[in-house]
Length: 243
Image (cartoon, rainbow, N blue to C red; front, side):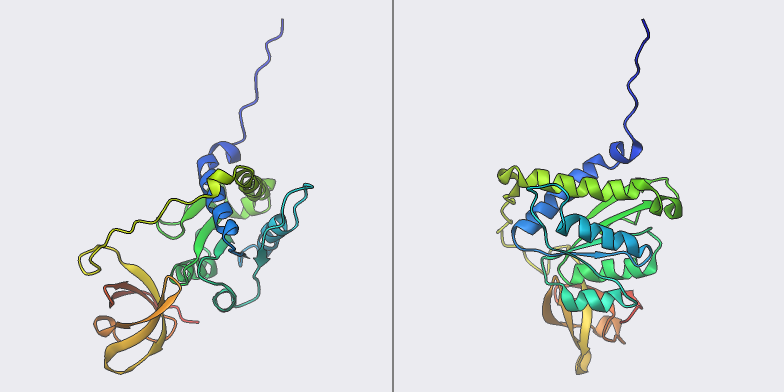
């Protein structure tokens, strides 16, 4: 009797499975409260368009169309800054080394967006996105032209709809309401400079909200600079890139 061996699962499914599940859960929860998903792929524009179409035009009867928009052109940063709202989702498809993608992902944190990065090759450094779904070890140029990248975001779309089929999963955990001293806490926040005033004061956007902070320690600064802010004070600059 001939032995039959099961084929091993594809690496694209086995590797990022947990990351895909976590990202799909977050996506479904964001969609459920009215978020729009903005898709960017300056390095591989066709993938950005494909991801948006995947979500907004479901191929399976009965699946809901989800608000997803592809953002392209030569100035992705300004386009997303203008269009997106705090609470929206930014999905990027690229290698970790693409400068345009890295820039818009860094700024999206200040804009109050949830970030999801899909790609291949070496992974982005920790903290550059809330969710990273990656084809580890694959050559980015080859992966971008293979079916594995398409399969990655098709699975993301499918798992997002699986979450919708279980409404209990859409209920987010309540936020912590314990009072925390803003001066004593260790949390530093990414901020984008919007306007510079006299005496070291600058207007910044932090988590999608505008506030005025003291930038004396990091002067000079200009609109578009990224800062690390804590307790109303800029501690360091994060980027020299400006719009």
